Figure 1 (cartoon, one colour):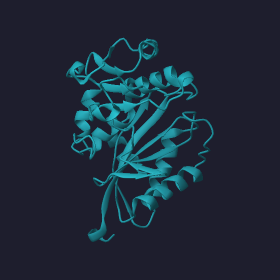
Figure 2 (cartoon, rainbow, N blue to C red; figure 1 turned 120 degrees about the vertical axis):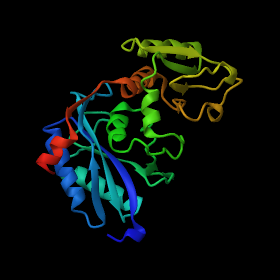
Figure 3 (tube, one colour; figure 1 turned 90 degrees about the horizontal axis):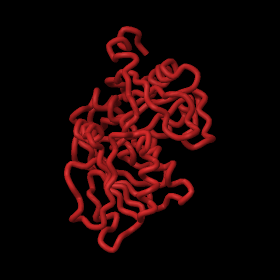
Length: 262
């Protein structure tokens, strides 16, 4: 590999059908076989909470570091090809799946295209991404949030897990209903930036107030659900809470993987 044109990339792996660990090992071998890709450190395998009412059984997740001479678009094409080759069929959004391969970061680049957004737009609050990634890249700086992966993971561990909600009273009731399985969550409806208190965990923007636009929400933790259909809003909020707070349990340490190889 030509070091003069070498880039660092980080990916997440996940799945909950057939034999997820075996499938992810096959995916890692396929990645290592691609010209212009060197497989670096791989995290432990973790069992994680399923996200979405149709997601099925618990998932297995991991993260991997790559060195590559490929451009982001070409790397993404290979990830999608490997998913397809190993049996991934895209049907239900947030449904059961054989394999997910997501491009999380590519150097410190910020990319916004119709088919590729880097950094991955939801990686900053999802524990099933942050826990394995923090194992292999704790000091990686998120180029938008401007904090490390370790700090983003710490935000998911603050108790109470404080939600700043920008929306109507009806939105507040939906959010509280969605938070029922998560006793560590406290939800505060705020109407101005003067209401913001630190530390807090996520700012959820649902609809504008006279005082706050989405752009004015705290950059580090803001997430917009303004385009979410009303009938899907409560489930979407619950999915967000599950992704941010769901259990992440190590089921195979990285050193055991090294012994078995990929």
